[in-house]
Image (cartoon, rainbow, N blue to C red):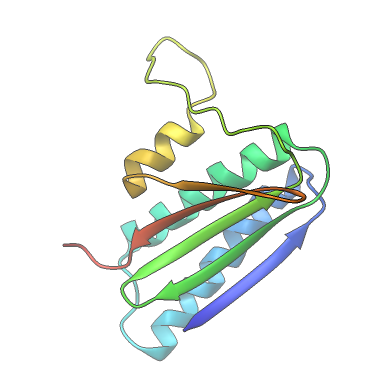
Length: 131
C-alpha cells in the first residue's frame, strides 16, 4: 500500500499544495508499475482540490489530506476541524459556486462523511484504471 498525508494550516494556498501532494503520489505509482492514465490523475486532483477547498472555506483551523492507494483505487480522505455537517446542494445550473460536492459525487459515484471528536472526515475513492 502506498500512502501519503499532509496537515495544512487552512489557508487558500493549501489547495494547490494538496494538488501537488496528489500529483507526487500518482507520479510515484509510475515508478512502481503502470502509471495512472492522465484523466484519472486529473480526476483525483479535482476531488482533492474540491474537498480541500471546502475545508479551507467552511472550517476555521487546520485541515489535512490522507491519500492511500488501495489496489486499483485511490482513497482520498480530507479532514477538518468543523463540526458543521457537509451540505451537498442539488444540481442547479443557475447557481454560482457551491458545486464542489456535486462534482465529487459525479467523479467518484459518492463519498462518505465521518464525524470525529474534533471535526469530520470526507472520504472518496477514485478507480485508477478505466473499467
